[in-house]
Structure formats: structure tokens, C-alpha cells
Length: 205
Image 1 (tube, helix red, strand yellow):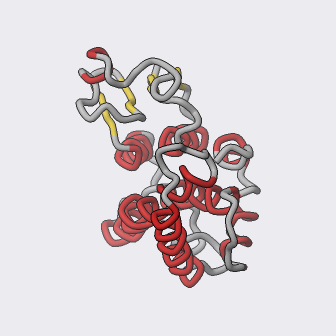
Image 2 (cartoon, rainbow, N blue to C red):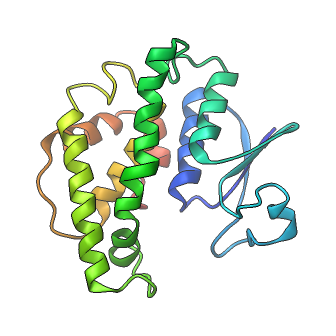
């Protein structure tokens, strides 16, 4: 059975869990990371030398990096609706996954830890303000690209799994936000999916 190593409070672990739910994959999850088994242990570092969650073990295949794991699972199980076979269509999905990881997440990380998790290591006012401003800028990009369906046309894909979890963090983190009607409508569409209710909209940012 597929093993998933990582705590459910991690947005990247939930990305993998949501993907498994959409595909219908059975798995065994193990708590690793903050408050649980340490990712600095030799056992974990043998699986991921970066010491980060999630990690999946699928037979002889060991993978880290949540977007890579999601792509692997969709491809292995033939879910071409989630990750198209056509190179151009697949690239459209992957570019939004990459944007979420490379631009959107770095924008919100400081503000999220300061305002939602009250981290004592993230209490510098200037850094919070800079992170909030960057987060608003990236969310305005998302607002401008969303229509009446999903991030890429009418098809729900892995890109929506990546973005849907970040949208939840945007909505749950307490600070003064601009109204983004397309993002809010997108969130309501996501909430129609049982897997999102389980892994992405349970009130835990």
C-alpha cells in the first residue's frame, strides 16, 4: 500500500491526500514533521535528504516534492483528466502548479505564519506588511485569470488542487483583504467536491 509520510496540518501533505481521494487510492499515512516524528532522523533523511514533508513510498519508488508526487500518482493511475497526456495541455496545468509553488506560496508564507499560526519567529511588522502586499498582488493575478470554471478551462485538474489549498489559506488568514469575487466563486465550486471538503476546506489553514 502507498505510504504517505507527513502531518495533515501541512498544505503540501494535504495536496497529496486530496489527489489520492480524487483518484481513489488507498494509502497509509504516517505523522512526521512538527510535533511528530522528526524529519531530521536518519530514517527520514534516507528517504528525503532535504528533510521535508511529504514523502511517498510506493513499492520501490520514493518521492518527495508535493507537485511531483501528485503528477506521478495521476500519471500512474491514468487520470488524464487531472493531468492531460497532450504536451500542450499538460504544460498549461503544470505552469499553474509551478506558479503556485514558485510565486504564490513564497508570497504568503511569512504573513501566514505570523497572522494565522502566531509564530514567534514571524513577528517583524515590516516583513508581515511586505508578505501581505506580495500575497495581495499574487491573488490579484489569480482573480484576473479565473472564469466560470477551473483555472484551465472547464476541466478540474491537478492545478486546482494546488491552488485550492492556497485559496483556503487566503480566506482563513485574518487580515484586511480586497474583495475578489472570482476567487470567492472558485472557492464555492471547490466546495462542491467531497475531496476538497475532506482535505482542503475543513477549517484548518
